[in-house]
Image 1 (spheres, rainbow, N blue to C red):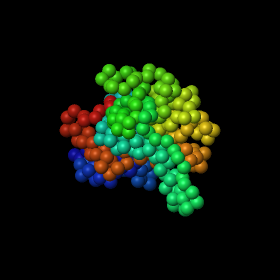
Image 2: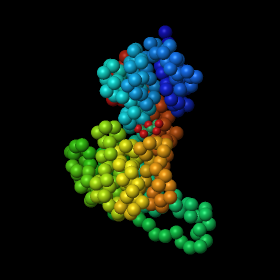
Image 3: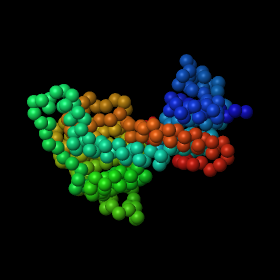
Length: 309
Ligand code: 8YV
């Protein structure tokens, strides 16, 4: 009997090909009448491939055994519902650490030196009328990292290569880390030149970067969000960027992607990216391979490679 699995959104081509080789894949998002289709196949579905799984979908799949997420973040999978229904959940950690850390440093340099703005300046022919201006650099600055996890540590290593001083905040001090720990985010924000967000999304971190934290970072402070838009009080952030309460921001993630607050579009002290932290061929292929490997391990009765639940 072939193993039947469910997909509810498009996945990477290489990942879809690997799934199709191994399983009977039902693609709900391609059906004319998804509800009717689901009602018919639901009892046969043993796995869901991909993230974005709500509790009501889990409730409709009586024989679901595993949700194999695509991405390290699991904030868009209802973990409580999965646990209650005895459904395992996996994610794709580690394989994306380098790509996300690279983009973080890239965004920081882009913001400090206004690289995208400089590119536009040249293309628009404005250089012919005078120089572009002077901006800031990373060297010698303090970067406060919110979330010194697997990706946070890769960012820290690279920030040191930029001759920055690294400090961090998280739920706990990590004994074996060489960086100064702040037990209050607002204190770290006050002392840092740069605040880099790389903590998980979800209820525990919702708007953890409040107006108070942003004001502590202050008019000379730079914010970098490479984690989740939900971490930040976005309206407060926009307000402070517009009014000079923050020096600048480099943002790869937003509260309601792909919607981006329009007020940011006209600001020169902002660098924007379309949630592309892990978006390289190398990394996305590795994420897809890990998703498939987790499913294979599960159906072979072996320990999961990266289990969340
Ligand atoms: C996305 C990410 O998963 O891993 C994460 O948590 O945010 C990204 O890698 C990716 O955009 C998948 O669509």
